[in-house]
Length: 143
Image (cartoon, rainbow, N blue to C red; front, side):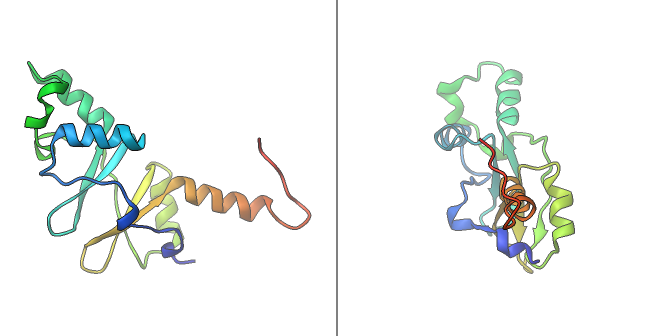
């Protein structure tokens, strides 16, 4: 099976750029209730993942930084601690699953290294669940 089956396209992905501000990222993550989002550069390439933890460590380790002045901090100035690896769109399921074990989402890039979307771990798990349990005579409902 091709990983494209699970792809959430870039147009539907919440992301930021390294030139966005910390305040923009905080507000976007709060709005969508995400704990991590991809960072995409101005050429459309995936450059990393920003987490709530990265933002909290920046607040903790920067004297005089508070929410009111986070609009003066660019995301490129914030060290990221999570190294979400990406897969190419033509990767196989083995590559995808090995990454999804440790990542909430797997960024997907094309042959020119351009970010085209993500694959959410929850989508993979839901697919596997359906394959395992939604067989004709073996349906299991989880409440």
